[in-house]
Image (cartoon, rainbow, N blue to C red; front, side, top):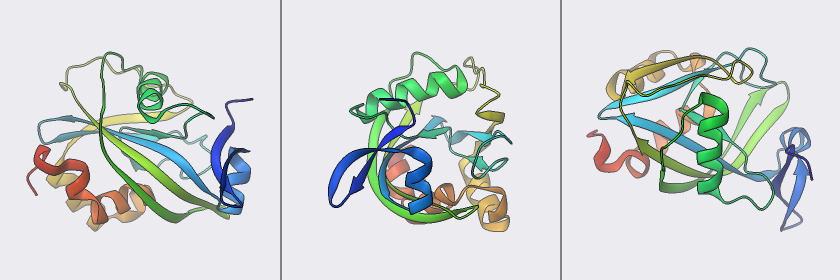
Length: 177
């Protein structure tokens, strides 16, 4: 089974399906998103321009689809390392949410997302994988929510949904809103 096979629901059953097929058909599938925080600061990434959807848009620290039979927490730790070279963080599960959004090029994300947060310091070592990430930046939470409201076209649809609809369950007492 290859890394491009992700858990998706087909006829009501969870099955391994090729990632691009999942997005072309808009199948509901599993995903993981992570926010790394330092106080009220959030580590964001700008997606690489080579990404097949939402290239160049700003988003949460990292996000991905788990491999077939991979647990969400294991996936979160793996992806922090693969995308950003971040090791030694143990993200805490905050919520599971479902959303559906068009992401361009006729592709649809219909995800059931396990969302995690991890606490770190801004001085931690970050080494972005250029195939995944073109830029990283620490942004104050209040500045981020204001910027997403002013210029939504600069951000991924899922980050907009998280901040608009799930802010309290994701950030809770970590960030006073």
